[in-house]
Image (cartoon, rainbow, N blue to C red; front, side, top):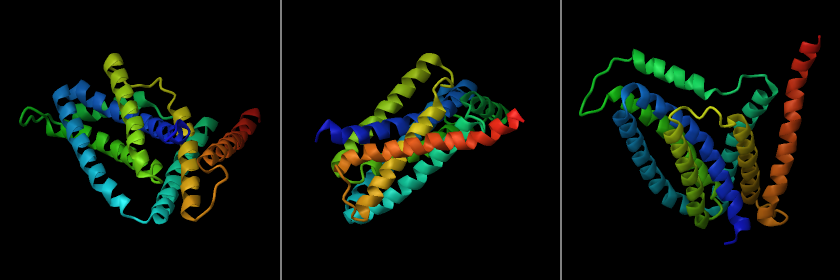
Length: 250
């Protein structure tokens, strides 16, 4: 399998996972800072174990589905998922809705944890452990879905996609350990805009595959689809920002 075939899948898994891992890291950092790292790591470990079990159960099950039906279902889900990210990124870039603020999320989480009553059991605090577990699990489920989805066309693509997601998780973990603060300087909206374009492109591609469309250049068609979506997204930013500019000018 060539890098031309692997690069879109690995890149999509890496970028999408990077966004989700940044959000999960903010919650784990809040738990560790306020209630101690034992509870934060316990919740994270339980969530990772649950995710491994989920992927282990879903992976083989997906392999038994008819290929075209799987591509169509996964393509539609990816399209809905990607368009949701892209729509929010366009509105944020245009200034219609505020940018996502990891520092604000961190402050909110730490404030809630300080208000909760501390009750230690078996060396960890249940509320703190549950907070870390929920945060990592929710973001991790999206990562697991994206890894399986972008590789839906071939089981051979699952390991490379998983490696892309793992690389993102390791990068975010290393950065969080070094900085010991929320990764607020990560250009999250730019990442979400890019991921929205890429995931939507995969959604259109797999939906077409499921419907029996023969894409020109096969996998290379992803580049053309992504370019068209990028152009449409940038045009959407300008259109969404136009009323605000007119209001300011008036």
